[in-house]
Image (cartoon, rainbow, N blue to C red; front, side, top):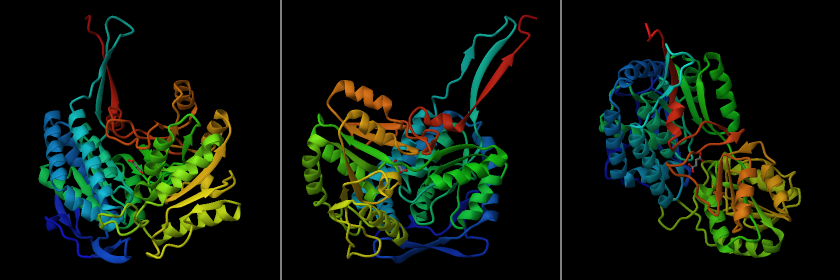
Length: 487
Ligand code: SIN
């Protein structure tokens, strides 16, 4: 399919380094595949450590000046960028769907969601406050000021190529930092288009740099280079652990937004129709490829049969296909490896006694497609209970009591998002307090927005993105003790 864009200059194969669009030093290219048809869609620069090193040095120089800029100036430029992203929403959405696969309606929503972080941090840039603290003696005064961390390396995933980048770059720039960004190899074009617009917004050269290509070389440079003072990563827990350990040599600050295993609990006092709608959106958004996607649905015994039947009939309405078609509600997975992983989770569950209520079969649209699947008769030995599924598979578990549900929900190393449906106000407080997760959706299946702190506990990571807390991840606390003031 030929991609029709209003502004073709948004599509670039080059990387952005110190205000210049560059090719890789060795001239090699990275292939970008459309997951809906498996065909080559574009090629981009395949850069490595030398290009990354130069970008880091440029960012270091640019950051010195930017850290002295007025916060109003930062807000103004972020505001320009926000407006340009919104004006180019349709083109950005088309590029995003072409390389990522999600339905075009979801891609449009992601552009608005991603832009909301730029707008939010344009506003928040003006709200960096310090403290004065009561001194231990009368001849001293204690001040606390907040200063930018410095150069930030941002590594982002393919599931939200725009939003995961804006929610790192925008707070970094608002705080006075400079960035070197590495988008996922599967989805570099959306990220490059975002930077084309950042250039038009007028940010000084060197402040924003973007590198695509040799993942391990780029990662090694980012984690070992002393000029990088912070690394922020969204992706899987195993990769996050490796990055954290590599960053320890130069004691960099890290923010890690890692994997999840979200429980979705439906108590028997819940509004069942609302619970079904919440489960649909939190399970099947982006074909199940978000780290806050529902991973395990826990339903209380009295309403179990009714829930399964209503949920199944809603799933049957999903339209699977190429995301560029307006009618599609569920697209392909990112690639055939992802689809194979999901198939092997289904097989493991079946071997261990799961019943297939819906789907579970091969989809004839191509290797990357998985039909929406519902599995019941789930037990805790199954991989679908313990691992992040990252696909359109909904395992459903029956439980008897509130305590049993909480125990099952917390029985995971992950701690990102959890959801539950109940109309009992006491239970709402009890269960929210006992669930060991960073984000809790109560009677709500969509919890992501720029105003709220997004992040997890346990092996789901550290740090928070978005909200008034998101800026702190890019600021250092400096304590200034002024002595001798009575002399
Ligand atoms: C993610 O999957 O990493 C982010 C999902 C979201 O922002 O809702």
